Length: 263
Image (cartoon, rainbow, N blue to C red; front, side):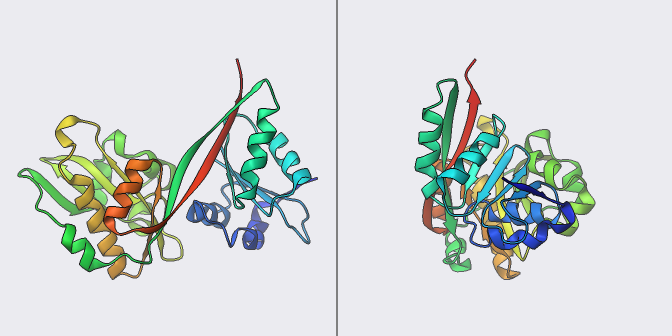
């Protein structure tokens, strides 16, 4: 049996997520700002928790079969599911495989350590951009002129140029007046830590030009100088290779699960 935690008390249960390995900044930000729904197995002495936000459920606590079944039965379909304990993975696959009307899938991601990042290494990667491309730090004017393709996280977690300038950070590359690549905080900086989001306009003329490399180097270098810890969680192998190039180390693969009813 799980009990819903009132929004004003959610921060009191942050300790359940202290050892969280994946998307930890998102978890802490959601709890701190009371943006999600939190349920626990016991209000006074909790050992399990489910934090739900934006069609994602974060499950904290050591694996237990009975608790696991309760949690999985309660999840709406098309919800992304993330676990704090790897022992859950075998169970969730077994749980869903026994349900003939359910289809489940996962995306393998890779999280990294920033312990070995260095300005010296970043400097060794620097190259001049091709003529016409300009690298600069994000300001209010740049935010107001971001193309739609680059605004997904900005819209979800910031919503205004003023909030981004106070709580975010980023560098962009423009071609002429058009911003074509953005490396920035995926959500507001929390506890001097920043989750990196990088995106380049999907157009052949902007590919393989070193735009993402230049923007990420500038962002990471700024973070290191300002004692901000950059975080990188790769959504695919290409992103993981890029992270290693930039100096992130100790890759750990993990699975982001989804499920939905078969038509």
